[in-house]
Image (cartoon, rainbow over all chains, first blue to last red; front, side, top):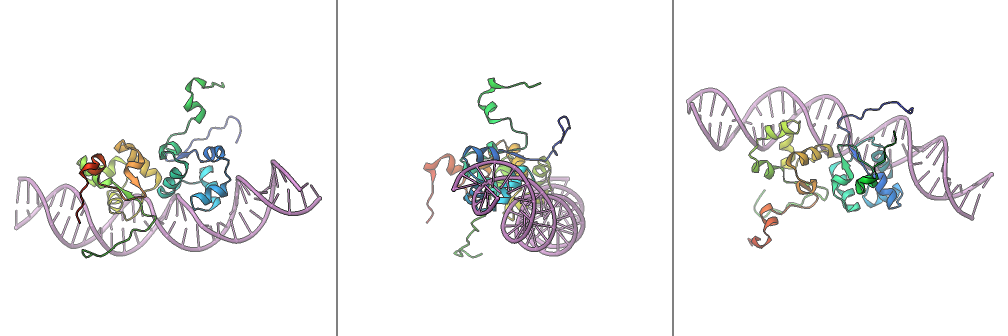
Length: 94
Length: 94
DNA sequence: TCATCTTGTTGCATGTATGCAATAAGATGA
DNA sequence: TCATCTTATTGCATACATGCAACAAGATGA
């Protein structure tokens, strides 16, 4: 995808922070997958947004990360966690 | 099912408070279904526990009821809301 | 009584979440 | 260099979420 190509997400897409949370905890997909009893490839599908998890899996991930569902999954695009925690840091790169 | 038949929920069942929340707000299934853009029969399926909603639908219901996902859906059986709000009221009917 | 509303149920169709196997490719470290 | 780890991708199979149509049955109110 080129620099200024525009890509519109479908209105029913669900965004998630799985990759970020996994990176923070320095886990491989295999380790995270084991922790929530799914196939490691499924973590890849979720991180890439290929499809959404079932509610059951979302609740298991929420429990594993010890975070409310809404902090991991959202129908709106997430702002970077850093920005969420310190709004003053917002960068305008335009 | 008879009085003392034992029914074990499958370990992966998800419980929900949709029927209670809908009753509180005095909505028909049709009205709730319209509010979250699904078929009214699907509300029936969810209330009866015939199947779980997708994460997308769970988030829409959560938004509609203005409640966190965890208060509507759980991998554990819910205690009655009344008991949750006033634990001292717990009844032992044995 | 009759019409309407609400709910339960059955049956069929479609799309999607998930598993799993196989392969490729980049990173890392011996 | 070679082996190993991690990730991406493709293809196939299965289970389940959802829609929709049809019908039955209880409640309610004219």
